[in-house]
Image (cartoon, rainbow over all chains, first blue to last red; front, side, top):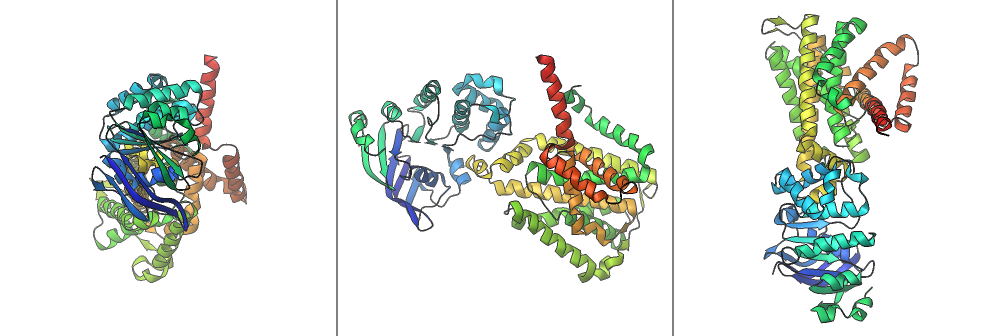
Length: 230
Length: 314
């Protein structure tokens, strides 16, 4: 088992955002976490990534306990986070954005650029332009490519298709499908079509808890169950 | 005019520029300009590249100045040793205070530097006045370097100019390296840089130490130039000079720092001859920069070139 989240509670001050949540991810799996706004999905992802500390429970990655580690330590273990807001380093060029991601993984810049270009070939023409000038979809593809530098083991992706045009969504989904079996993904998503297409397993979150865990295509494609949590 | 092609000859242009200033403002004054530009370059690494505004950077210039003077008095009159001691002192102060200071941001960062500057000023003026001369300051005597007498105005000018060329080269390499790119990324979003796997505290601390060390280096050159140090070298109220210079020239750019350093020195040295309330003019200039010319002089120039290039293409 690659990732195991065991009975974690996460709180913002006195407000409990995540309560007694458990979740597992096997190698090469794509696991979705669905739920309404405010259900605790992003909080869960940020806790796994080390940005937040659980007040109870454990998080294990490759059998090593990682709750309590800082975000940069979690990243160096091979867990990468792709944020919902699609923010790149806007004042740096695309090349510099890639360079910043390559250095901690000890990856040569040329190899890192090759990784990103492999995801999104058209990025080549924007290499020396400020990344802030890219469209939302272009930024998302850059962020996904950047997250793959250094061959991570687990990607945590927060709403990858939110706010994107249909064509760009298809590009993003193709990228995610290409990762299937190679890298484990935990994806927060509200688009049920995306969930049905990619998911191996689905956790539905409601009010900080996970009342439903769906396994297998038959359960996952029963949209009536998922819709009650969205 | 292509600014990118000019950048290849930037060191030559810097030397030529300052040589051209000599007949206009005098040799000694040009040396002052050069040393101030080194201080602005040091400050701009922190402000322009790391995005941390310090209200107390005179502390580090003053540490260097007093360390150089004390070295000349108590250790040796070797000027190179004095420069080494001064720079080391600046690095040490940055290394010790950095872990406290770089954890802060925004107004807290600005004011904590001011607080430490005030403490340094007090120590120089009162607590350690037996060593520093207190309000009267202290003189410094330096020997020769490779047979060259640094009390000779021409020698100190050439020496300072060579130091500036070295600092410009160093800063150019540093700010375009992965380290420099990282500082700019941290300035934009510290948290996101952490998520990429960086211990951003280490990088911020290192940037801070480089800035304090270079500021102290500038302080030591000041003492070589004047052979005298007074509390004005560590006066916190003078910290605004380097802030103004950085803004006027264009923060976050080596060439902006140079233009700002020269620009500020010209304004502060020559405008008072014509306008009694010259500080008001400086304030108006600053307001113009903040509201209309955010990129400073360098930003304005690059904007003109970019505009002309777009016209040619269309």
